[in-house]
Length: 95
Image: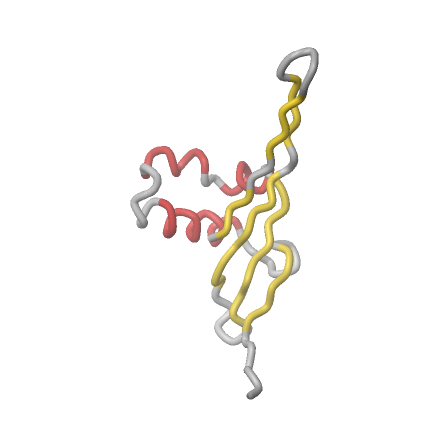
């Protein structure tokens, strides 16, 4: 059985994901889904702030060009907790 895949996975730059699409898909999932307050979303889902968090990948329908999903791979954050150890964290967000 052969599947006809009409979606493309690539970086946000290569898929030409514009700021309004990025903000819209995050608000659709997190605000409309009841996970985030709409006032807070205005700040945390602002496109420049989201892009500054790390690499963004997307899935776009090749026929309709509609953005179907995104994944944000945040930068590794490392900080000194005390003189003996460091704390590392990495987060990702799949929408």
